[in-house]
Image 1 (cartoon, rainbow, N blue to C red):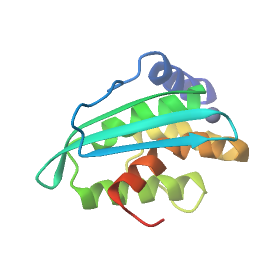
Image 2: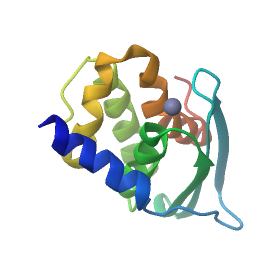
Image 3: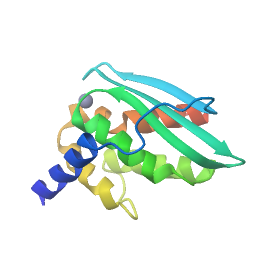
Length: 137
Ligand code: ZN
């Protein structure tokens, strides 16, 4: 199982989904993880209430970049409310609070919980998006 999870993370790291910048984005948020030196900027365009496009740019460790790649796939097409719920679920999973209902690729990141110093790497893009949505937490 470990190897499979590592493969999923490396796949997203080496072939990131939705990597790039979005011009005239409705949401643009930069976040730095000083613990590891990871940098992420997330972009989103909304069509009414739903996320029509998501992209990310940045650099850093494989976990931070793979997690951002996975996040873009998860949030595409979601409403603001659904996106917020998705982010809260993911962050709860990363502090071991609850099982994420349909984890798919995200399950690969759950192993990171064992390395507390890396949890911020995994949640960086998600926190950036959450801030962009104007959430408090
Ligand atoms: Zn990192």
